[in-house]
Length: 225
Image (cartoon, rainbow, N blue to C red; front, side, top):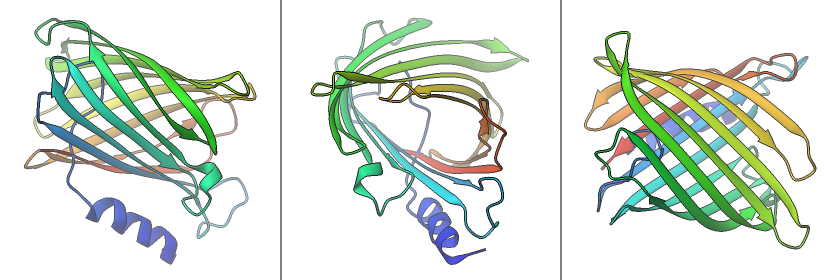
């Protein structure tokens, strides 16, 4: 394994504190969760030692009264500021936490691809039983608006999950439209194993649904505290 990839894996697996999926359910007042992940992608005809690496960090903190503060950071190349995404947002859950169907809206802002942007989002989630296990579905959509260019970038994630005795099975379909109108979609199955103390380690793959699939590995860690 080459040194950059090894360093990335040690960073993702060693910085842990983390926890549970984001979604429309409100975060309890005073509670925080952190989710770190990294994907290693080997484009066609690329040597196995030279993957493209995408890293991300997602943080939520419960403020109470159905308000949750969030931070979404990610980049395919941390050495290039023009590739970095840093978005802070405030989410309000419209429905009571005891309701089966959850609906939330959020607003925020930050930078994306070296552009100042505003974020507008909506989330839906519901819990149910499937395969004799507690399960859930979430749909998260948000738009990044650049006021000067008057362009919009759109992201939609739909996730189906099943809670097992020591972990969670998940399948996610994601769609993305960039500021210039280019569209991509991917399918991401994964498994998150509960290692105790509110901590999970996640492993999965990303499959490009538009182009010939490149081999992609996804690693992550969650912590709730």
